[in-house]
Amino acid sequence: MLRMFETHEKRKERELGGLWKLETLSSEGNVSGEYRVTVPSVWESVVGLEDYRGLGRYSTTVRTSGGNVRLIFKGVSHTGDIYFDKKHVGHHYNAYTPFTIEIGATEAGEHLLEVVADNRFTPDSALHVPNDYRTYGGINRPVAIEELANAYVEYLHVKNSRTEKGWDSEIVAKVRRFSDNGKAYTLSVDLAGKTVELGTAVFDSNRAILSAKTSFEGVDEWMPETPNLYIAHAKLFEDGEYIDDLKERIGFRDIKIDGEKILINGKQIFLKGFNRHEEYGTLGCAVPENLINYDLDIIESTNSNFIRTSHYPNDERFLDLCDERGIFVWEEGHARGLDENKMKNPNFKKQSADCLEEMVINHFNHPSIIMWGILNECASHTEYGAECYKLQYDQLKALDPSRPRTSATCWHLKDLCYDMEDIVSINIYPRWYTWYGNDYAPLEHYQKIREYIDTCVSSKKPIIISECGAAAIYGYRTFSHVKWSEDRQCDVLRELIEGLSSSDEISGVAIWQFADCRIDGDFRDWNSRPKTQNNKGVVDIYRNPKQSYYTVKECFGKIKTYKD
Image (cartoon, rainbow, N blue to C red; front, side, top):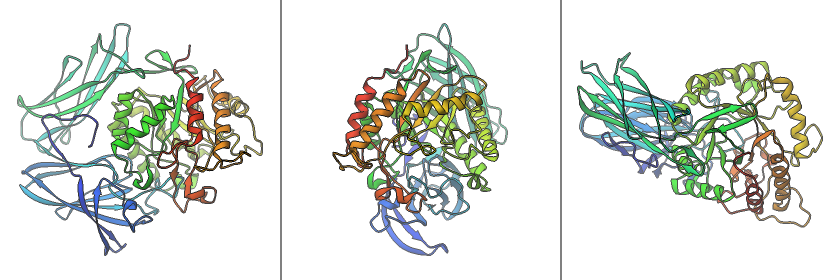
């Protein structure tokens, strides 16, 4: 399943799941092992490949009826090279963003599809480095094949803003064609009982952008307690003949920043929730929709309303479910803990820019996403690092000016980027890690950082505690409440939530983290990660609840979503 709703009525699209052949390869391309695996999955879930880092070639046969073909990959980790009938047709970097490959005209019959995945840490990879979460290998998200007419709708974006009477909407679509056949292509969009004509495509290098502005009255808005969703259905016509379509799901929701306030549809909100890694037990980052839904069941049961996708874009099915449930999402570009030297990798700027563009283009319509994030705990305290932050903030604003931008920092009294972002986000761990040799109480810790932030910004901004927490080994209980015990984790989380949520200046608290996750074995802090895991989850890697789950549920239950 690619999405949680039907995306086409006209276009022929077929998911390429089931069993594929997987061959592990040497650096020279020689086969070292052969397996049968399901797609999507990660090869670390194959017996014998639990710690495999290298190259893997996936292969299957696909049947086409002739005509134009496009391949859709929702995720290949972390680098993928695509071959169709032994011809190299595409290359993509980043495990967490979708990409497409145009094959063009094909002959009817069977064709060989091969995907060579690579999860090695090399100088060519600026973002996937040994880290505090695991970099898996394989086809980690679904794959599909489409058979297309001479032109098709590549994407459809709907941007909504509230007015006194209702909503103003801007609809933008991109159309691609395979060849100039002299025919005219027109596009219309059905949305909320209205048909909006976007006009006739004017192509530049076989690409065309069409847009229209309209307004809506009497529609139901998207809010946590009433997550109303509408289908925007784009229909493409070739000389009047209906040839292609694309459905997107949208919500009537806008976000405004008013001083220290975050306003959703005019209401001030308080965000309470978790950072969540896309990982589950032995399945790695290839999480099926039933387990994604189970995660959201657990998260909602703690009285949470907010999830940060640490530290990369998430599966669209996760976002679809957040749309349906009314859960706020901070979606983040891929990067964590990169120092200045790593940010000077020759591939860093391009790989980061590609990731942000793919994230925003593909996830633009999700009403649950209320902010974009970048560069978690990277070198925002250096001049070069600040230049990189500005590049990414500017790129996000150009791609989507409707959402605020933020970044979680650990460089509290050294950060140079506070005045660049729309929302200030800080990671703090009082009662777990000492800060400059002192173990401050949570609110005291925050206040010392806030005093510095006020000297850096030209105007007041919302502040989010983007990470806070403590670790515990599942099942370790003790009367003495020592570190790594579930008892100590409960103590720390209670003090954090109660202390930080009591401040009128703070707009949200995100616990680090929802579930324990594996880390890369060669990550520099492996010796402070028992079981080679980050153990700060309120549930373990299989979602067994620690005692802290109940503590968070109780504390979050006392905090209202809307501020008076």
